[in-house]
Figure 1: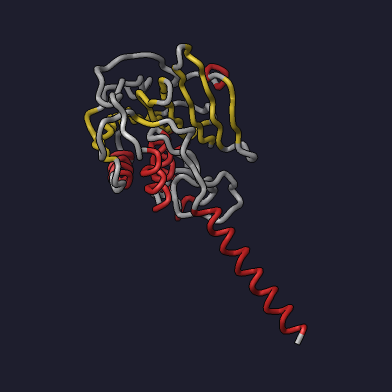
Figure 2: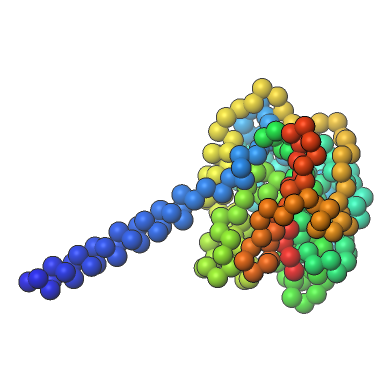
Length: 255
């Protein structure tokens, strides 16, 4: 009798632990410090400047379509306003570029300019020096990196930063196997609803083009201070303080 009770108690404990673990995963907050585009209504539209070519054309369309499934934001692909080699930012939008940026160690870089808590512009750079190799020249790797870097420009951080954990089925998850992590998942969309649950009195979207900083070929020290680094060294986040409440954050996926 006592053995049966202990067995039931043990099984009940396992169920409770499983529920708590699941709740911890599904309720994890991956807002990126509350940074967001200022806007006066939802849904709002983020322009993605098309400075890509070749295999990246279809990948950018997939990325745009995926993130537009959100109930609070849409994306639209517009003609690029940047030279793909330097991928200079344009105020009020996100420029997406690909080029052979060299054997500098990074696979993809997202740079996000903020003023106070508001995102003002962003760039995504995709390094063909590595994507032209057999390791990374796959649709899965291209989709994951493009999706994740563009996701950062909306104010999203990663859902999980442990490469050894099972895939969560989202591009906002660190992984060595991108096969099931190529697109956003429901939690990404739910997090966007949370980030954009309030409205602003002004808008930082679609401003007149302005040029502030260009970091494409810079070395990591020029991105400012390193504020986060994954245990296996595959992902980093840098912060550069421009003064007067303005900062540039650089999210790096290393090859």
